[in-house]
Length: 106
Figure 1 (cartoon, rainbow, N blue to C red):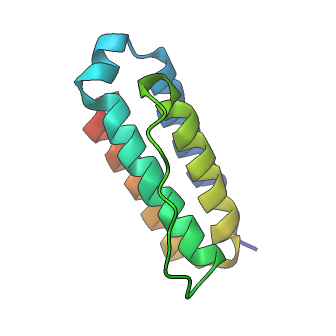
Figure 2 (figure 1 turned 135 degrees about the vertical axis):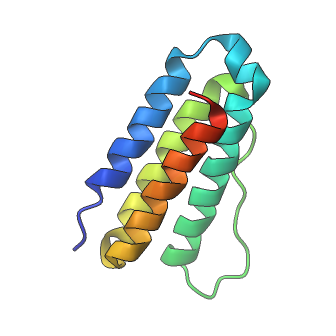
């Protein structure tokens, strides 16, 4: 079983920065970037958990103040799904989160 702590740590750091960010930064795109990443992580987790299932449920937009929580949920779900995957997938997920944090500017 793969230790997914690096992914959880990266997601928590991004979410904490979002929660500490001023509303103006969230409005300028940080929240949208976080939601985009949360949707991507969520879709990946769903495909791992139910391979062959055609439909991936999209995470709804719950507003800019919920983006950090949505990112946390999606990241932790993916962490659980990746426990039986390879280290390459974990590294890719961590890179995605780090890149998302840079895009968000937090």
